[in-house]
Length: 499
Image (cartoon, rainbow, N blue to C red; front, top):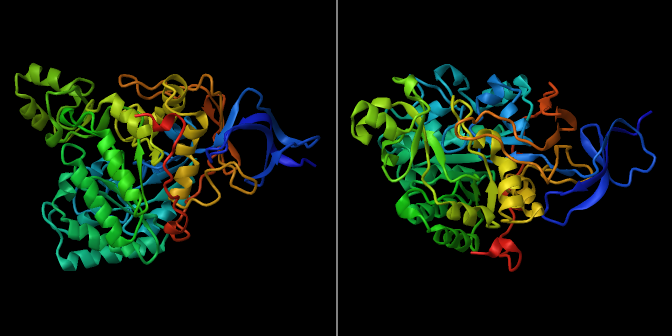
């Protein structure tokens, strides 16, 4: 009779809390961590020699657009292959549920797939569909503001009426009862930009009764970014809910070098309310082709175009020259389309990424035929490039930003740490070699240095391949997120405080 299902011996443990690494044995039994210490003469069905390798909690991707992918491609290879064991969907105001489309999904909901991907008029329907799909990773979900608007407004270029806000609130309340984490918004997009602050505040107020969270793709990430952050803090105070600023950045050349101003706003808000942010480890963003972002200041790379699919894989500048059109006219001709915008200063990315209030999220777009490499490479890039090569922070801090901090902010209980009794979401990797291999021109590539991944105690990835096991679960919000949202304590040492 074996003592454990799996035993990992002599492995270096980075436990997700930010505490110093140490060497121990780890035993898994019945999907949970059953031993953390010395296994002695214990036996197991599967034993792994972890010497020279690092074991961490499975990475939690707090910012994804995997809403329909976890159902339609439940093997979830882009995430599983880089050590991600939990994804949070429904970001940027766009979610697969609750949605009842009259026509095609409005931009940017089309990032989640075509019309037939939206089959979930109630959040409960979506939750059931995820559970039936049995994805390879755990799934927790937000409800999108734009999704709610598309259900109840005849057109999206205006703010909602009191009757429409009441209908949206009722739908959000129903979703929260069935386990939604909270509300997300994408106020920069044309489909939500016309919603005034009052609309967002009234909708977010529904979060107060259950302790849900508010995450936001700010109204602007360009020059008015500080005003947009102030709006986010006001919504959080009105709703008495924690606020997460999605993919915080200084977008556009005129904004470069302002990261310390953004971080000062974040810290100031953190002194009076529960706030945080996420960031992806790249200086290029990706979304639909947005005319407001078209500029000659930096490279814009086209990833897809419905009317001109043959133009994908070229820069907007090159396409405009071929067509002998001004940049803006070429962009209009390509729409609807997708683009990668090389519009950030790497120094700003580093400042934001290293800040103790920042978590890591990929913001990957799985529907994109030429996706931004963050879809396959975000988490190994943090460990390989930013931690090992750039020495932006310690390995322990890097892992904390991708595990323990994320789990505590979203109330993913008994996950995000290597602790006895916790769910065995684990990733085994070589800290000396782990790195992202996905590039902008060849983005669909698994990372290097990931030895094994367990989801709920089940070996799901090993030796550069999926095992075929799909042990993910739907993770509903089970309590008031405010009750354990981590407080901000300014750091006074380590490399994180360098400016």
